[in-house]
Image 1 (cartoon, rainbow, N blue to C red):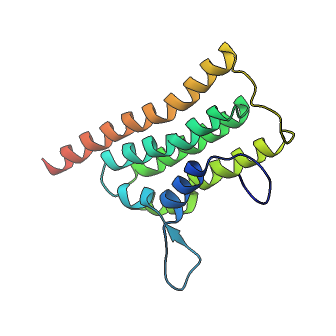
Image 2 (image 1 turned 180 degrees about the vertical axis):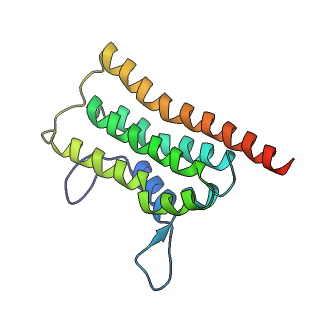
Length: 159
């Protein structure tokens, strides 16, 4: 539980967002660098791993039955994160600024804060489950495709 809002954002998602986006502060600045930026330095595979790990926050949002439009925005943040990762070094710097996981935690908090306290999580409908699966799978699949493209381009440059 979040002491400020009373919303049931999973601790795992909060901790994951912190590790992925703000694990270490750059001395003398307010800028945090997380594991997402570090593993993103590995062409292709790093961005795929980062997207897969970031998908856990989206999965937790589905488990909390966050509305589909919010899930779509969260998925969009992961797509932007994957697209930024395609550009070597510059994309990784932009990824530090983008902070998709932190944005997704804020979106989840706002959505859950609108739910009256003590209200049980609604039972999932077939439409919700289908939409949620699509919104979780698309960013990860896009990252996979982009990772493969980046590896092919890297091999083409080296060879």
